Length: 239
Length: 110
Image (cartoon, rainbow over all chains, first blue to last red; front, side, top):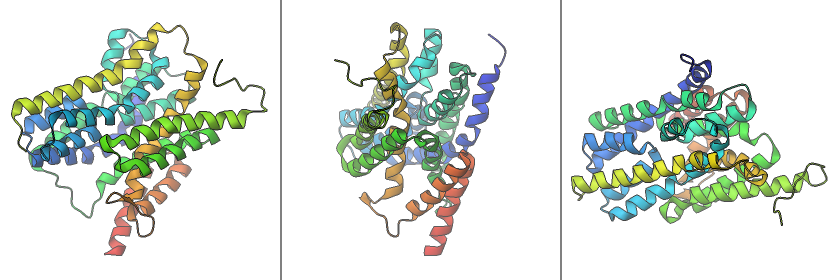
């Protein structure tokens, strides 16, 4: 293995601005955990062992309201089921890497790591996919854990006039734009967004998962519709 | 919160283990597939737009759990962010534009 491969450094460079958005989110989650009754160690350990903010906020909220433990666990897992889709989406790029490295790398898989990687990997065959992914993914976890710990100790101290938490949706907005440049991609995004908004009141945060799944299906349908007449359209449902 | 320390750690460990299983699932399994079937490969191309849009949209369109368009500060700021994202494809400029626009809108309203 080369020393600090260029592809890993490429990933580090691309993730740097995203780390800025992780900090306020971590502060909020750490502050919320302690406010709900978690110890500082528990709040920090939560970020280290789960590494998925939305599911952590849901568990904090549910345990804070004395919901049954099983409900908290199931809710968190339903929220995190989108990681199955990320895993499937990245898996073809990592097939030739050693299984131990893939297991370790998977531990760091979270929304911005996926989004940054897939945007780069779909457009660029020159980069080593797994090394680039590691460069993007590995700095996110220490940033997440560190900012949660600070938030747990000092509380969420971000003043109201500075809406830093808005940086998180802005990161995903910036990352979704390159994926909607073609029409089926735009359909997938539009349908995913609409279902997530309409289904936001569903229990277990199922709106997000449903939006993702139906959005993918809608993208496939749109592709079939627009490619019909073009020679390269393969049958979507093989008999 | 009326939960013992052991219970909190149990929840954390259960969520952590399950979440890791999700993360590793297909990254592990695809090794045993000779070639990714073409329909699956096509479907996977739409994971990024569908899921990322589903992550963003509720935070822009929902205010206190219901859809709001008129007078929705975050939607307005989000549109500024979207325009900058479209032009620059830069994460940092989209963040600056979106957060900055939200600060301005909030100042104007109050």
